[in-house]
Image 1 (cartoon, rainbow, N blue to C red):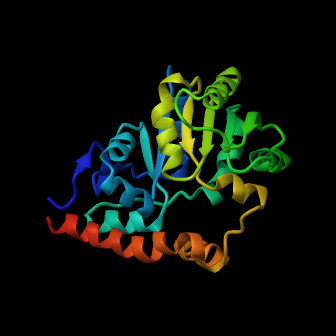
Image 2 (cartoon, helix red, strand yellow):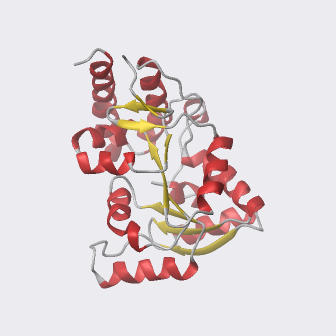
Length: 254
């Protein structure tokens, strides 16, 4: 069997990815936000799945999530190679605006954690400028001691818990944000945790996306490479072919 399924999930390199549309994802976030305990809604792209391929703990963490949605055209292609279908990619730089509109309509509150000092706050301001009724219970930069047991980490957890957000959006970059959540998930008082990567940098205007011709046509990776070549060349120019080779290996049983 070329495609391994876990429920409706499509298994790509050992990680189950849910074939969701944006509307289905919104409905699930709303449902999960009303449950007891912290629910995890994580995202998977080729870089994430390459990391998971070599890191069993990270792979297990993604598979423990309530939902894992597709955040890249590479994962859509992989699903097709493996005999499945993912209806659309959901990329934070685009999705955050429709998520904010949905949260405003449903009365869901956010806490933003990540990026450089002032960036998450500016992202909150810009989102509220467009959606005045949006509830943002707090915003905090990501430059603190992430070590479990450190005073700074404990203070951040207390700040989040005091606001008790429906949605905790963490933008510390991958895989730091996933590891931070792995270590702190049992202590957090929030409805749903999302991992946003560079979302606050995009929303605040601090990071441009690259040509729309690329981002609108499934070439987000190339647009990001053009904007940040020195930081991202290895992730895309080495990582993307490696990801495809691994998916083909899964498809043909190697």
